[in-house]
Length: 85
Image 1: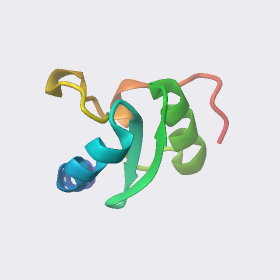
Image 2: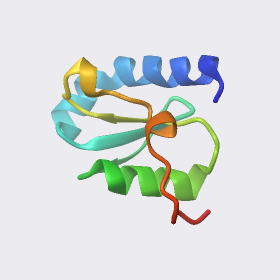
Image 3: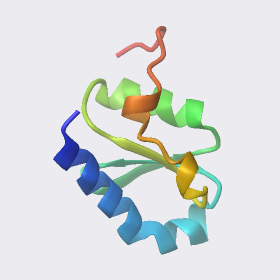
Image 4: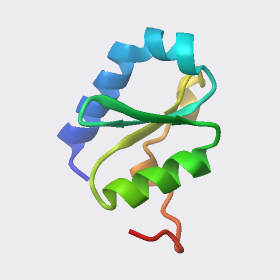
């Protein structure tokens, strides 16, 4: 994982936070290349989608409106054994 890339994804999330909180509060969103890719009801659903689409590439999953301590980049935190590419 490239630290510069993940920092860019975090900045993109922060830049769109107000809009995300209006339309996707409580959802788990995928941010890739500075763009909102999708919003999902569960972290598991977001992570599966991101891994299927992007594999080992850098992406960010955040739960919109979650306290700061719960925000962890999915590419670091979760990797299902059974995920297909």
